[in-house]
Length: 193
Image (cartoon, rainbow, N blue to C red; front, side):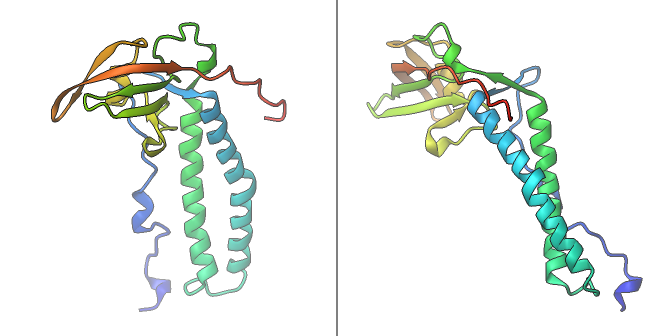
């Protein structure tokens, strides 16, 4: 059947794969470090000012070549454009609700709060170093854990030398806090930002 008579949708099966933000507990803010906010903002600016215009130009050129049904540049470009637009919407929403916190300004530097880097040991004596960050900044394999994660929740408000209890599916685990470190205050942003 001729494609002219078939309703064709621009949606792909992966269209519903909107970036899933970690759910925040009801009534809480989307805390984010200064560095995390700047990273997300830089990504948004890169997408809006560089990548999206480049892809729009390619799609426009490909569309001018005629038959779009078998035009790989056009089809891939449209798909990439949808991906970019989805990511722009996601980043815009997350940055709008962000509550930026500079952990370097924390006055209680011996106690664990948002932005702290904590060295702790478990009951087997194995040591771990984690930094407590916002949900949009978390990278557990790099030691950056979300402030709503079970480990972070167990550590929050504890002090150096304290032992806290982490509840896991396997039972309770005791964590000994060895060191609490905060970064220096973040420098003022560039006026160009």
